Length: 138
Image 1 (cartoon, helix red, strand yellow):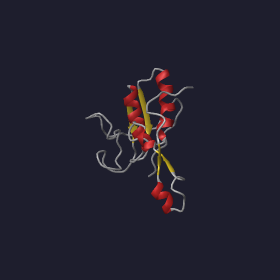
Image 2 (image 1 turned 180 degrees about the vertical axis):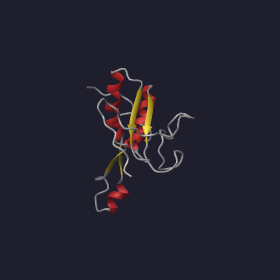
Image 3 (image 1 turned 135 degrees about the vertical axis):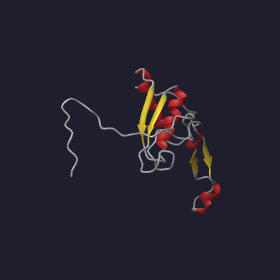
Image 4 (image 1 turned 90 degrees about the vertical axis):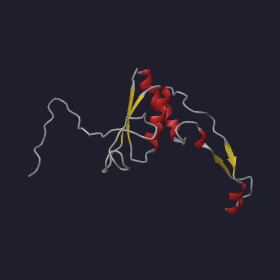
């Protein structure tokens, strides 16, 4: 399995001399890896994972990615950005208890979604032959 390149690597290392001194280190002993500068959806270390995750559906000829996460999910945000960059449709299932257009609502959108693409999502259980539905308790 191979990954696809969706971001700018390697990200830079940045010296933090004042913070180093503040926490008792020598000025040259603290460096910060700047994965926020990947150039994809706000960056972060999850970009590396998403580069691997998007490669397989592309090879399989898929046209849509589907994933889920919490209302503030970095994984969901980066999946949306990666799908857009790779030319895939993206459906994000964000469960919650509020209306779809409010934080915590169940919706299929992020700030990276195309205009008009956000809408409510009704979670459904999978259906397969022989599956029995249980009657609702009284």
